[in-house]
Length: 67
Image 1: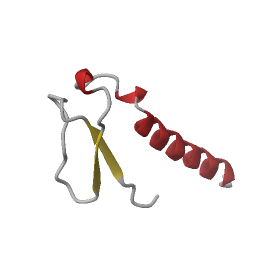
Image 2: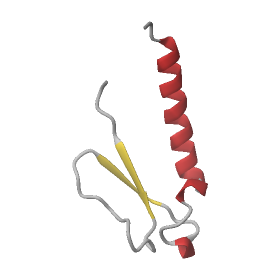
Image 3: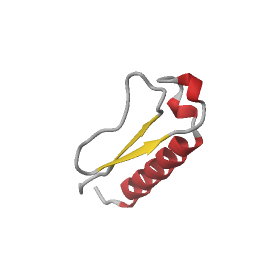
Image 4: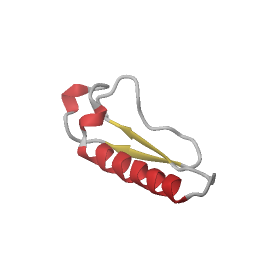
């Protein structure tokens, strides 16, 4: 399996998460739902789009492989 890029989504109002200073990390700020802080990230359209795209690609690759 090749190198996977880590996309780190966070809100500026999140008291736990934040920017990660690690090589290869794509930090992305979520601007909506500022009051939610650390809650309900998987309801955000940006995150759902990335997760759906990556999971679909993984499923396609898995189905295309011979065992």
